[in-house]
Length: 260
Image 1 (cartoon, rainbow, N blue to C red):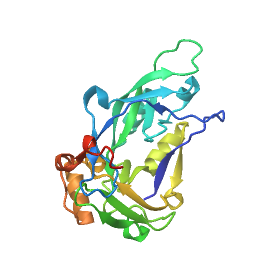
Image 2 (tube, rainbow, N blue to C red; image 1 turned 180 degrees about the vertical axis):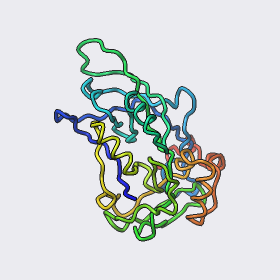
Image 3 (cartoon, rainbow, N blue to C red; image 1 turned 120 degrees about the vertical axis):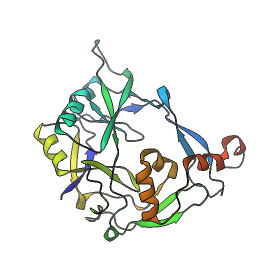
Image 4 (cartoon, rainbow, N blue to C red; image 1 turned 30 degrees about the vertical axis):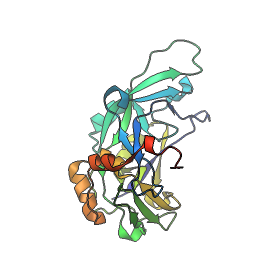
């Protein structure tokens, strides 16, 4: 089985460089780690209308692409035509959430507002294969922050197929910003000439340097209950409920003047 990283191609077909500008803040800072270890702030995802990804489009030319991406969180976005193609192909491991366009910049004449969807990856392949060298380095019992050692810049052994759920779109802990796909996805996208993405073979995937961290609250927000329990067993750590992490976090108002 061949897998690939689905990577955003930041250059349009005419050589321009575009990324969508995210103007919504969909996470609220609850507080910081009770242990005071300088871990990233504890976040809680907003709900309802506030949870909708809202973007500015830097140029109408960007809407000619079949894949878009935001400049900060690297959220992937697809237009309605691609969403229909994925549905017809029967792809698994993803869900679509609506995207709100705040502004299309450099717009010289009125145009119909396109329907865009956030591509949210739900498929899961647990943790990297032991041969990748990626392993859990530390775990905070207070806020649940995980830090993984990444000894190699590249590894052909990222995916442990025994932990892969069989989805066409999936991710691997702790690589939250990476989207991995099956060869079937690659064949359909390339066969239809879609623009705005490229496929990187597993042996060429560039990994974070030295180590990478992951917020437990971020992980739990995208994992199903079954996936979360599986992850805690794989890492041999207890599963801390999101609500408990939020309750224990030091409130922001108590952090003033403490340099945290």
